[in-house]
Image 1: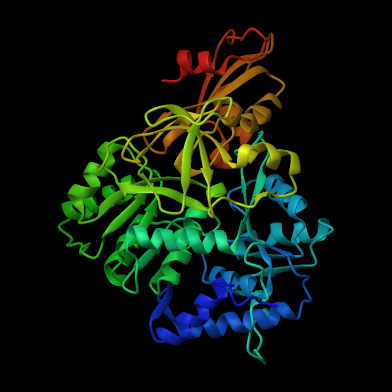
Image 2: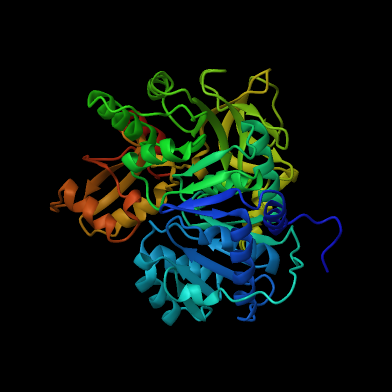
Amino acid sequence: MTSQHTLTLFDFFRRNAMLNKAGCAVHFNGEDTSFSALYDQTLKLIAGLSGLALSPGARVAVLAKNHPAFFHLFGAASALNLCLVLINRRLSPEEVAYIVEDTTPQIIVCDPDMAELGQTLTNNAPSLNACFVLGDNFSDLYTPAVEEIHPAADTKSPYVIIHTAAVQGKPRGAVLSQENIILSNLQLNHNFGLDTDAAYLNILPLFHIMGVNFGLGTFMAGGKNIIQEKFSPTQALDLIQEQKVTIFGSFPPILTTLLDAIEKADAGKARLDLSSLKIAAGLEVPDTVKRWEAATPAKFWTMYGQTETSGLITFSKYFEQPGSAGVISPLANIAVADDMDNLLPAGSTGEILVKGPLVFQGYWQADDLNAFTFRQGWHHTGDLGMIDENGFLFFKGRKAEKELIKPGGENVFPAEVEKAILAHAAVAAACVIGVPDPKFGEGIKAVCTLAKGADLTKEELIAHTGTLIAGYKKPRYVEFVDTLPLSEDGAVDRAKVKALYGN
């Protein structure tokens, strides 16, 4: 029974259909969908999924490009107490299969490009009963709703699982509840001032936590989602003008690509009307932000967050406190601590710890890891930071055991890449590090020694790793050396490798 104190995401579908029924909720491929129509579509999907007799808490895997069906699924999962497993479609088939094995979903929803993989998984994974393809048999699930929907969800139970590479070199499913996501989105709306006039361009994928935050946050505010299946700078600029876009999220190289397209249009004397833009938000370098703010009326916002914190927990305009990741947001209790978990005063550098209603429910089926992550009552992020006296957080890198590389906003764990590299018989030892990259902000570099008498080119090694892991995890840079520096315990000294080969 639903408590009188419960607020679900499905309730926002009903509310928007009542208060803004004719307003545009979603624009996709030239077509507008009103809030009333979106609600009706979601009700029909709820009816269809109900017919599958999915058990409460059952997982539904989603492997697709951005599409309006994401919103129908978010609403239906909310009402039916289902859990969406949002899978990064850029992962290799083996990595996708691991996530399916890990979470045991009962059905999988794919776009046409992923249909073959989805069907293969359904044939081989014991938990999967059916594969539904957008634009094909997924439409069969939309059946007339016969009665009023009363959401049955426990808003603290698993609602979304997003796998992150941030733990022990093995993807771990971060479990988020409806309460996590609702509060995170309301906080985002508060910081960005989103309301019914908001028009969000879905450049970021809806399987990514920032895509979820920005997309559902705009929806909850009663604003419009303009969906791009795949980022195209020329189409993005057309949509910004046509749909009066006010906000979008960005990871390198999105902003640079847009700026290059703007300059090309200016050189051709095309008149771009970007006057509706107010906010671009994400990760960038100062020179690119300066270019952006000179070329458009929009301010660029910086922030910090993790999937494990339901998204963003610091916000500020990029140059408000140069070098910072923004000021601590209202619903996040953030501290920094030393290696003994002693809290440190302002101005000190230590591991970033987080408490509060935005902290995730834990990693899927990983009790020991959760006990370690949540020790002393805090979520230990594995990131290093400093909080100044004004509440601004400065990111200071990552702890060694949670070393991450973030090319274009994706999480890549060096151990994953090293494992793939060492599978090549010609490689004797390898150390993977992050290096500055002009296109993606941070690039992946492999520093390797070869087996005696072996011969291997950089191109061959990069191609080899691409057969084992996702393309975005392949090293962009490879350097062969005679020896790798070792620490006293005989392990490769990553810090020395960075010092020697990290530029």
